[in-house]
Length: 98
Image: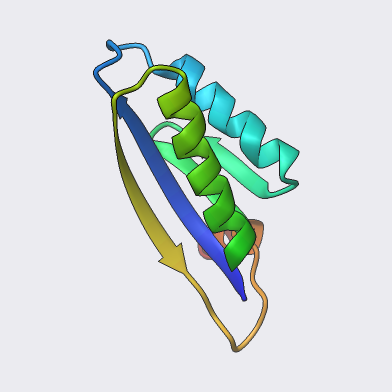
């Protein structure tokens, strides 16, 4: 099943700069071949359900291995069965209205 996810992964107990941790997670997504878009408060990801969830797990394991004792993550998950729609399609449909 195809899924679109908004992932916000926040390492805790590691100070105020989180960019190094987020960059490592971005590399995981790229390595796994998942379409993704980084934004100011998270990352949008699209792909097959199992592969996306595996990437989220791998990000958690990697960030823990980097020394983060805790991680707080929010996931927003969307699926649809009536048609295929990419992240780009979703944005373009709003931009057409604007």
